Image (cartoon, rainbow, N blue to C red; front, side):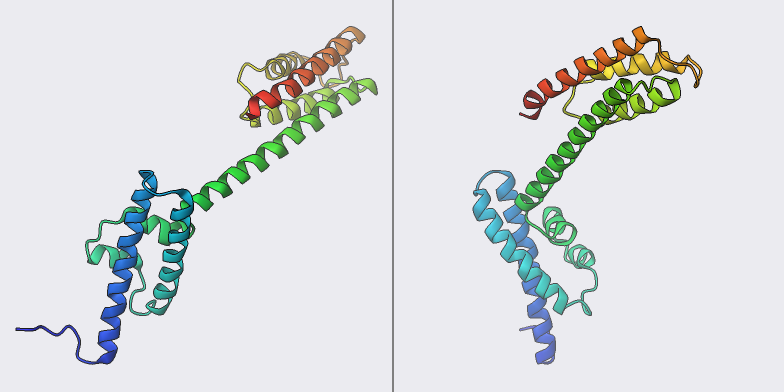
Amino acid sequence: MEVKLWNDKREREMYDSFADLFAIIKATEKLEKAYVRDIISSIEYETECQKLIAHFKTLSSTLKDIVPSIERFHETYKMDCPAALNRLVTSGVPATIEHRVAAAMSATSSASSVAECVQNFITAMDSLKLNMVAVDQVHPLLSDLSASLNKLTILPPDFEGKMKMREWIARLSKMGAADELTEQQARQLHFDLESSYNSFMAALPTAGT
């Protein structure tokens, strides 16, 4: 005996749409697994993934009143497609594009951190040349420099500049705010800053590769 799932054309269209949504989620899950397992190329994956995401967005928008939650639809039909849910609902873009965006953000972040370090090095060295040698003048500059060096993850923890700045900050912390560096101390700090700056610039090409 044939069982009818629908009573009219509208119900039939609804179940057809359900079937399409089900198929898109299943296809996306298979595509994600194929990409992770390197069965298809990045170009093929991205092209097909963009098509599925576009179809999904159109269909889920059409069904939003009947299927307000894709997660619930997924759960109701016991689909077991976590990768598809992540790609279609959470991310909304192919993994290849996601990776490119992440890489670009990382590169931008590194570039701005490098620029910040360079600026802090130059400011500290210039301040010493202008005879700004009071502890409450020097300490903030070295603190800023140390913080910017620590933010740059491409530098190792034992990088010369990081260690020397920590030593100087510890030394200044034991002095009074109005105390001033002696001429010898100021020359030594300038030397350490210059040496650390040169090491920093030399480390960048190696660290960036």
